Picture 1 (cartoon, one colour):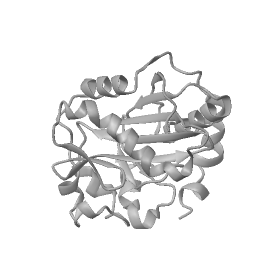
Picture 2: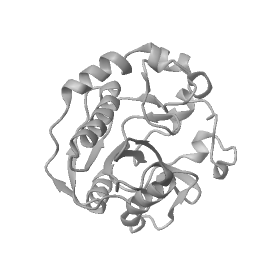
Picture 3: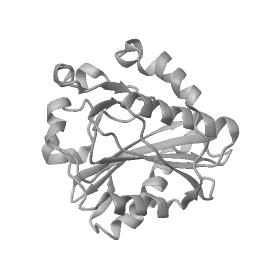
Length: 244
């Protein structure tokens, strides 16, 4: 269902969380509208930010007062999934993939399984206990190490997720509330008991991802004009961020 072929590799983190979320949307639109080559983007924030899923309620998922007190921005992304804390030690991979024309939204679950299995295969050589859990997580011994979400257009979809390798897990409890929805395998555990780092270096994660997706082509031309417009009209707009 996913169109095969090599991917372009983009290793780029913009200065703040808002711009990085906007760049993911801009790249998805660009690949869709130009029938462009699929892309693997790797990025990692230098400071902490709370990234809220498109349909998440901020008051139910985020400790807003702690974020404001500590200067941690709250950004609503345009994809589904849950609310996450990003920052140093959390590598984000964003895949912009094309699908066969007759294999669209009815296959979201299948696409998630295909993508996660492909990510998982090289990582299992480093951490044998890794497996898919819940709707779209990767876990080791029942503890989450990666959360993932998607956004689909007509013939292109974005799958992005985190891989924790040197993240301060203790901060999750400070900035996030208990989630409004949780997978069965969480079993009511607190953040500190449910999330952990992979015993893998950033270089090993990068190598695994780029090899798994044959990401060896030159990076795409970057749609900075669209990023600017999205930042101005959506991602720095409180009406968008706090709409739920």
